[in-house]
Image (cartoon, rainbow, N blue to C red):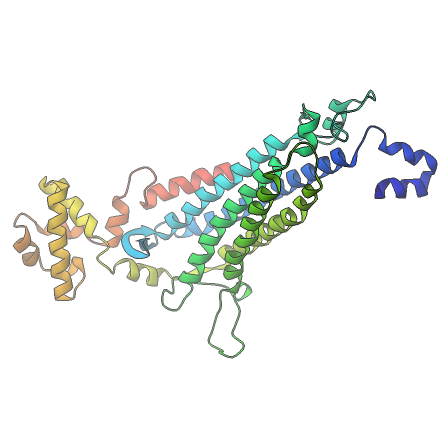
Length: 373
C-alpha cells in the first residue's frame, strides 16, 4: 500500500489499478518467501566461506596431533586437521539443508489473492517466473496460509547455529590457559577492564549465545502456527520479526566464526604433549595384541588395563614402561610393541575411510577443496 501511495504521487489516479487481482495476503506471503529464499542463499555463501577457512587450517595441520576426547576426557590421539574437518562435514549438511529449503519454497503465492484466487485473467506462470520462482503454488488457500517454508528455514538456522555453538565452545576451551591449544587473534578476543593479562574469547561466547535467538524463533513460529485454521489469521503477522532476528544472528555468527578460524594460531607442541598424556595409546596396545599375538580383543583389553595400571603406579607414560614390566603381564609381548605406542604411530594407523590418519585427512581436504572451488 505504501508502494501504491508513492506511485499515485508520481502518476496519479491510475496507480489505483495496482491492487487489481491482488491482496495483502498473497503479496505479503510472496515478499516473505522472497526474503527467506534470499536469506537462505546468503547463508549458503557464508557457510562456504567458513568451510574454506576451516580447510586452510586443516590442511596446515593435517598431521598435527591433538587429544581426541570422549566425555571431555582424553580418549585417543587424532589430528587437529581431522578435528576441524568434522566441522566441515557438519557445515556441509547445513549447506544442504538451506539448499533443500530453497527448493521447496521456490513456488509463488502471488495470484492467490485473499484466499480463493481471482476472477481476473492473470498469468501466474509469468509472474512466478519474473520473480525467480520455479512455478506458482497450486492451491490458493495454501498459498496465503503456509509458513512451513519459514519453519524449515528456521530449523536449518537453528541446527547450523547449534553447530557453530559447539565449535565456539571448543574455541573457548582451547584458548584457555589450562588448555592452550590455540591463540585467538586480538581482532576476535578482548582484554579485561581490570585484569591486564586476560584474553577473553568474547566473539566465541557471543556466537554460543546467539544460538538462543535461533532456537527461540523456531519454537515461537511453531507455536504461532500450530493451531491456526485456514486461511490467513492476524497471528501470522508475528512471523517476520523473529525470523529476521534469527537470520541476522546467524549472519553475524558465521562471519565471526570464519574470522576466528582464519586468524587463530594453533599451539602444535601443546596439543601434542596433551595428546601423549592420559594413556591415549592404550587402544593401540590392545590392537597390537590382537593383530600380532592373535589374542581375543576382550583378553587384550584386560592385558592393556593391567599395563595402564602399572604405568600409573610407576608414574610413567605407557610408551615408557620397561619391556620387562609388560612381559610380566603378558610374556609374549616383544620390543616391537613400542613402535605402535607413540601418538604419531597411533594416528598414522587409523587408515580406515573417515579415519584420522594424515593421509586420509588430506584426501578429504582435497575432495572438499575441489567441491568448493
